[in-house]
Amino acid sequence: MLLIECPWCGPRDESEFAYSGEAHIVRPLTPEELTDEEWADYLFCRRNTRGDHLEQWCHASGCRRYFNVQRDTVTYRIKSVYKPGEPPPGDRP
Amino acid sequence: MSDLRQESPLAGFRSNTAAGEAGSPGVILTERPFLGYVNLRGDAGDATFLAAVEGVLRVALPLDPNTIAEGEDVTACWMGPDEWLLILPPGAQTRALAALGEALAAHHASAVDTTGGYTLVNVAGARRRELLAKGCTLDLHPRSFSPGQCAQTNLGKAGVLLIPRGDGSDAQSFDVIVRRSFADYLGLWLQHSAREYGGAGAAVS
Image (cartoon, rainbow over all chains, first blue to last red; front, side, top):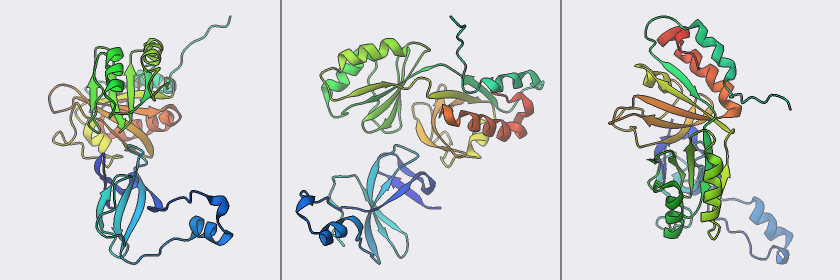
């Protein structure tokens, strides 16, 4: 079992959390001007990072808030957590 | 007019107390039904919002995560950075809602009556921690979870709000607040899990 640190509640058991995909995907401001290819890229295409990955988690059984996690996809080690709106740690992978 | 009667989600468990065993059970489960619940949301960074709420409840909202603030007849529980659960005596939610609605009219805030959506089971007795630890991943030791705090977590497969109750750092009992749709499941889970600590004496009543 992993302990995941919620930015509000502190370390809690992995079973309280839900994974919500890659973080920092910005919705296009003018979707109607996009080509099908660009829209599909926004909707479906995700990084398949080996190593540090910035992703969203939700403390589903706790405070029910979303936050961001920097996790190594090889070792599963969570290197940092930060609140929505805060800048990602270090250089964006 | 037909005869209306309030019935708690755990009403079916009451008859079980008749089979209570003699002696002191390790776990005592007591339902406190029909309490008033209000879900309150607003900007914790807005001093005027906090002051308006304090004016109504006569207690300041808890701003530290997973803590509670107790007023004369209200317990305010931190549920999120912009969300609180107010627990009030039975029936008191109506007046509180009206007062909050008036006080918060000019704010971007909401107060919603969730009475009837929850019920509360108090878990007391010498083995209260062992019982909860069977289905809960939190550290329930007094050094990390004591009166003044609260926590939303899972108990068995149900989402609950846990509130340690009592004086000092060692909680004499825990309030378990659960959605009414999970109450039947959680009531059975508690009774089943409590069997080894006190047999039929540990009935929700």
